[in-house]
Length: 573
Image (cartoon, rainbow, N blue to C red):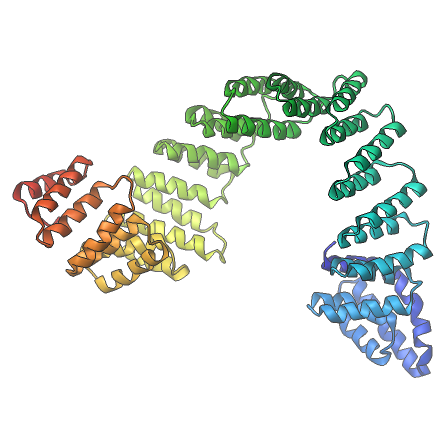
């Protein structure tokens, strides 16, 4: 329970608070008592109708008349808590609990407050006092056990649960809590003893048989574990969870064939809900993929799962995730497409399907599926972004801009980073369409929302450098990107090219060489730029060598490169 949940407790206790007011007010004069009573009752009334500001003001006035009123201070405590006045709230709750040690609600709330504040000794003291007063209230014993657990006194916590068992009898929740404590203490024998006792008390309960088997397995008593699982299956042969426990037994023994068989028995069992099965299956798949073995079994199990659950979207989604991880993108897309049909309002499937097509550069499919997705999940701004990217790649610039503009309307007003990203993308589209001024306008907007948008800073500064325009500003923007990511070859290339345009060829060479060194497979553009810089430094033969590398790497400016190589000189594009 969080500290703010004390407000809920106090709200529930309102009916019990006024009982102590008359006693509190005996020390007042008749006029004071009358005014106090009026203010107190008005505060209660205001609180009941939800007028909390008025309730707080009225009760504050009442508390000023009788500064020793436990009822008034208890009433005000949650308001102080909301205001962040933690210590004042604690003092008021403590005062009420100590002034009236027999008031159940005062003490319950104060004990809870102490517990959630980390003052476990104080919580234990108050819970213990309450337990003496109300031994019939089992919830107090439970709360006391939690306080001891939080303090780290596990033996005392176990003793509390033992007391609960004596009053309530053997119950699974109590046993489970004791097992957790024994496990924390590392007392395996106590865990075995406790679970054996539970199983003896309910000898035909297969869940308790399975629990005992699991405890035996953890304690290293493997034969006893298998025996208990087998006994449970005799009582309930269709219980899939028992097969799952037996799978863990065979996994521990290293019997992969038996392990796989038990996993299949669990997955095919119709009594296990599909969500649990998917959890089992996910763990099983990850385990097999890490071991890089028997992945053909996974396909077979999926086939059986789909036969059993052909209309279950989570099964299709999991199969799609599995196929994606194996880079079987066509089959993965098929599963995600079915998943979108089964659950069209689930954005995750649309995003995965669009992402698959985008990764494979199937831009028409991105556009088709994205537009369909928007009909069902129109508030997903990522989808507009993906469709815009695909549209730009197919040179449908107007459509890309329309998508970005619409997607921008779904970005939260306070999400400056995403707004900046959208405006940056709009700048890129405008530049690709040849509208440079509009592109720079969008970049400026993007930087207003996020001055550290590295992609925008890089593109903006590079395009300015290409034009030989506002190079000082371009240098400042590019410097930000290199400082943020000194190993990013793209940013280093831009920075070097700005120096080239400024005529600072030595610095240009330094940063361009760094860019080449940071790239495993340098692009044709990097080779060409480095060749240009070398030429300006008088290293003509080396320049020609790098121009040739650019040509071999498939440069888009092949004709210009051929001319440079032939003439052995730099030719501006």
